[in-house]
Every structure is written in structure tokens, then in C-alpha cells.
Length: 283
Image (cartoon, rainbow, N blue to C red; front, top):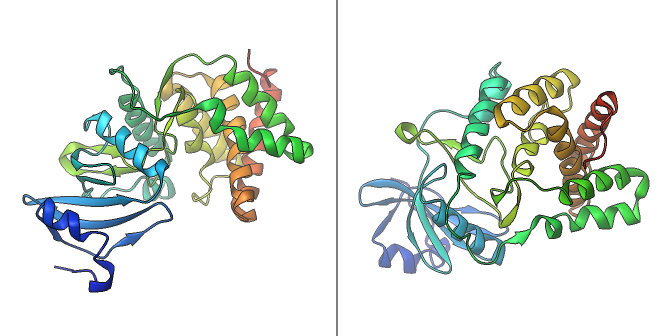
């Protein structure tokens, strides 16, 4: 059994004692949280201690899903979340790179559909999709040549939202994991409410996927995701164009020009495809 270094324990210690957890791996540190693999009542679990409101509200979303399409939450307070840990051997990223891109996309789409099922009142503190796109609209004012078309499409979509749901907000190949007998489940949601189409766009845009800017991959996965999601090709392409611009704006804010360039390439592919369909803007 791997036990974390003592100096890394203080953030986790109250929960290890309170929830009777046994450390089972090295800590993972992200800008918004600290995570520790643990055992809980004999089960593989992950302890996540949040450091910002986005992570804290995301934890509320995880609990609200109640294990339907997402990892099950075992314990929770205002600061920390204890959830089931993925132990299955599968990986959507590996599938996408090993000739199973279609299947990976369909699995992700099926997971998204489970997350979007009708439920009760949503958790408190969610952002509107309009607020979520603020970085794109700012970028379009500052650098219209690069962002104006994406922003115009986004405005059209936001003004014609259809199926408004609690969104995951960051669906990509490493946020839908293999939980063995429980199947493929989502982790790490954001805190946003809006049109369900938003959640499918990053399957086309994910810059961590090396093949994402290849035209043949783009067109094939647009077809697969449009069918699996029920969005239709034009609506999906519009969400891809809007999301690619937003993602590029975020990456440039972080100084990551490489990933921003990937998003701009996907944006160009989406705009070309929409021009071919005669439908750049949403109504």
C-alpha cells in the first residue's frame, strides 16, 4: 500500500479520521483541489478537498447526480468529497488513439445523456451559460479577426437554447472513466446550467487528443456525435464553433498558445463545414 509523505497529509487528515479512510496512493494536486486515493469500507475511493468555489459547487453537482452517469458520492461536506474511484482498465483516450474513436465518442455521448436525465431542482450556485461565455465575448471585442465569428454563433445559440439542463461543463476523454461493473461514468463537473448541446462540443475539440485537428477525424466524429446525441449536424457544428472559440480564449488567458492554436484549427473546420451547410448562425 502506498502512503503519502507526511508533509502532504495535513489537508487530508481531518477526513481520514472522520470518515475512517486508509490512504492508498500518492496525492494528486491541481489548481483547484487536492486528491488522495483511499479505501473506504473496503472500497476503492477518491478523497477530493476543494480550494475554490468552482470545485465546491462541482462537488454539489456530483452529489446531485446520485451516481447516475457519474461516480457515486459516499461522503461530502462543504469542503471535501469522497467518491468511488475508477479501477477499470478502459480508457477513452486510448480507444480514440487505437482505432476505436467512434466507440469512444458513443460511450461519452451515452454518459452525457445519463447526466442530462430529468431530475429535481438543480444545486445552488450554478452559472448561466451566458456568463460562462464571457471570455469569448471579451476576446471578440479585443481581437475580432480571430473571435468574431465564433462569438456571433455563440450569441445565436445562447438566444435559442432548447434543452436546458445541469451541464457537466468539461466532458473530454479523461473525464469519463471506466468504473468496471458500473460502466463508464463522469467525474470533475463544472458548475453551469444551459443547453445540452454544449456538453458534446469538447468531444470534437479536445486539444489533448493528438488527432483532433485532422479533417478526416473532425468530419467523422461530427457525424458520430451528431447521431449519438440527437443534436443533428448543424446544431452540433454551431456548438463546436462556439466552444472552440471559448476554449481558445481561455487558453490564451492562460498563455497556452499551443492548445489555443488547436482550438482555432477546429474552429476553422467547423466554420467551413457550416458554410458548406449554409448555416453559420443559429436562430
